[in-house]
Image (cartoon, rainbow, N blue to C red; front, side):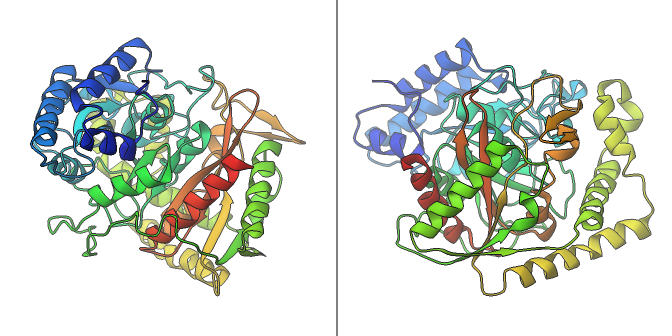
Length: 459
């Protein structure tokens, strides 16, 4: 029996039936990681992995597993603190850094019995849309290793797609979960801001940063979110929202109304991305969803506000790195950090403009349940070509500047958004579609997301 493609739900069921043990799976996973990991994994503590696996196995043998996550390995993006495993933030200056405390999300996983022994590669300080700027080197796209994964949760996306781990955590401030999910063909959720505590996560921008799950199917994604979500009174960003089972609505019959982001279908857009999006819309209509095209108007100034807000926050957070560790900071990251050296007046202006973006989204979604758009207009470029212009139709575009041009909206609004894969071309390159819902509507996102994924696979 092959274990590589087993997901969270699969493992939980097999463990419970005693048809597979956590130790067996951990040994098999270790072999996969040591064989070929696409530079997705920056640290793997095999001894810790086996320790957790043996503890889980004992609980299953005694009939007392802690949760459905008990014995399930999970990759942790390397800007999320783990006190037992080094946390590098993608920077050489921190290559031997061991935090004093686990991040809140990691504590939630450990309480549930999850096997936390894998740290996944990340763009330095979680800043980079291609997955190339890390002291550990660029992450390879498992379906075509000459191409990027997208970033900044590059290693998490690659590790999940390559079947190295059944699930992983990423972080998202403007698309860093959803973009690599689209470019590798996995499920990635950016939760509502505050649903998962950010305590113990290196910030990019504290008013938009979120931690979220990346998986190969929707049910597994919901299981991970159910585990890591929860109120943390020590974190001002944490929302006092009750603990939920986010799998509850998956599989239930449902129809609703969908606003189609028509602005995001304009050129330049890769034909395969557009084709996959239009196919998904047809499939949703076929099963009863009503759709209508909606425009958000000119978003250029609002996007700039989001970018400056992020960089101003990052500039403040990383003053030490800019001043003391300049030689360890990649030029691309350094330029972005320095672009955030703005006046406090401009910072406040950009924060206040968030409400204009929310107003536009509320207006577009009046009478609708969801808003959809292509996750990114491009496919994965080749490694080393992230800042080189490529031809899309009649246009020349820069992937570095273009990859995140759609995903920032949900981040700026602090609304939840999920990437659902819409297809893979003959080169192994994948496209995705983002579904946005109102705050705390993750159950509904999983419901429509699971349906759409099945429709696409069966098409």
